[in-house]
Structures are given as C-alpha cells and as structure tokens.
Length: 416
Image (tube, rainbow, N blue to C red; front, side):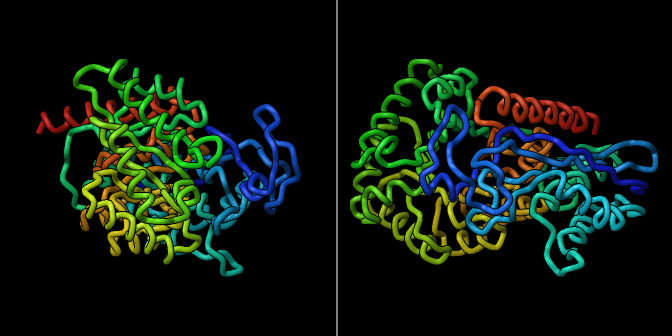
C-alpha cells in the first residue's frame, strides 16, 4: 500500500502555550490569562492558544491515515524546540516532508519513521519535534490501515512484544483544581491520580511541606470515603522541584518529610515526581539517585519519578542506567517520533525502572489515542489521560480507546 498524497490542516490543542520565562519573571494572572509582556521568542502573549497540525496521508485505496503535530505547554523553554504555530510549519511539512513520503510503501512502521526521524532540513537542522511526533503517528496509522490491523498489533509485531489483553492504569491530572478534579478522578475510578500541580512553595507545598501533607491526608480520606473497598489507586504528585527548594536539597530532611507523606497516604501507595530541580542533567541524576538510595536505607517506600532534565530518549537512557529514579516520565511530544516513546518504555522495563507514558495537556485527541496503542503494546506502569487540564475529557478519550482496542484484540484472539 503506497502513500499517494500528503495534506495538512491547522488545528487546536487541548490546552494553551504558556511563556514560562515570562511567568517566572513575574507575569500575573488576569482571569484565565496573564498580564505582562512575553519574553520567549515567538510568543505574542504570555498565554496563547495551543495550535496543532493534522497530517493526513492519502493511501492508494482512498483510505486516509492521520496524526497530529503538537508541542508541550511550555514550548521554547528548557532547551525545547520553539513555539509551534500552524501557519509557520504547514509549509515546511508540505514542501519538505511530503515529497519524502509520497510514493513510499506502508509495509514497515520502523523503516519509514526512522527515515523521517533522521531527515535534515536544507539548512542542516532537525525537523521540529512536533513535526516528527505527528508524522510518526500518521505513519503508524497508515501501516495499520494497510495491514487491516490495530496500531497495537503493528507495534507488537514489529517490536516482537507479547500480547497482554489487560488495560494499562490511567493517570489523571487535576491542574490547580486539585480538590474537585480529584473527586472526578475518584468517581471515575482512575488507577493513578491526581498530579496536583504543586509548583509553588508558599501557596501549594508549604514552607515546611505542611500544605502538601494536609492535601495528601485529605486525598487519602477522600479515596477511602468515595471509593469502594477494592479501589486503591496510586497517588502520584508532581511537585516541580519545590521539595528541594523548601528543604534546601538536604537529603536527610527530605527523607524525613517523605516518611511523613508515606504515613499520610497509607494505605495508598505514593509517588513523588520531580522532588528537586538540580539545574542540569548530570546534577539531577546525582541528586535523585542520592535521595532514592537514602529512602531505601530508611525503608521509606515512596517512589521517585524523574521528569525535569529527562526529556529525550537519550536522557531517559541515562536516568535508567544510573538507576536514579523508580520511574521515568516519557513525555511523548518532546521525544519526537512516537517510535522513541516505544523504545524508551522497552528500555526502562528491561532494566527494572518504571515507565510512565506521559505527554502534555497541550496535545490532541489523536496523540492521546496513539499513546493508548503504544501503551497496550509496550505495557508501561501508567498512561496519562490527555489532553486538557480537566479530568473528564482526557480520561474519556484514553479510557474508551483502550477498551475499544482490547475488545477488538480479544475478538481476533478468540478467532485464532
């Protein structure tokens, strides 16, 4: 089955682009937007709508396979590629990527995405991660249509993975509405919750961690009161380095605090994402490993999740090789082609480190559905409900795609 044409359309994402530099420099909230001047190249406002590009491959039998190019909320920050606006990048896709795809056979996902991943622009630069992300989704969908298989089956076959007909736990994120949205996640019986967006010491963590401790106690009680006896979700909280700030990166003090958090969460298991931000890849690995080792010595079972400075496949390999964390977040848009997410999950699991197929609130339904198939095939420990910052919509998209696919796979399995 050949690709006979490539077209593209502008789209919107499930959230917004935020100028992280401007926010850190003091931009203030004004309703749902911000006051202040943008400081990152490409931004026209501190907060602006998230944009995407749908790439559609026209197959020779008339079928259409699509994928969405999208970038994370804080585009242009922390070494990421620049702001991704549809009007800037549609011409690049149609003029530079499309000619490379037209006429190609859709007989191997890996072969074709590797060609795109390694392409260089006429000026020698790599293509934006968002382009590689969306085009790889379209290629995976195209190979699946050509073979009349699900995307899950394509990945299973090409990466020689076993078929396991069980759902993957879904992780919901509450955003700042961490109480009402936690209720939503509990009512829907999410496997992992609530993320909680603890990104400020004084107002969210507490100078001595007291605000987060109170929240974890509330969360545990809420799960036990709203949930059934059998419902015991994992609590996963992203603290954006604030614990390191509050406790001055003192490992002993942080371990003492983690012990309090563990007690507050019991009988629920607790994961803490991004406890500190050490300012560089090497320092982050060293500090996370020191904290993880100290927790083990003290017998504290709280798991550490790597996020900051763990942005690419190569970064993930370094964190895993150092055994610096109990789990790594695999942030799908930042890795470029979706094959990098597949390989990152496989690598982490091979060496006994938990894998979390994450991503961004600023993605689309297409990226979310593709992540479901990647997860059903590679079996990470959890999958992010996305896009958006509410619970309902993202959870619905991911949950329903997972259940649809499992029913289809079970039907095919029973036929055999």
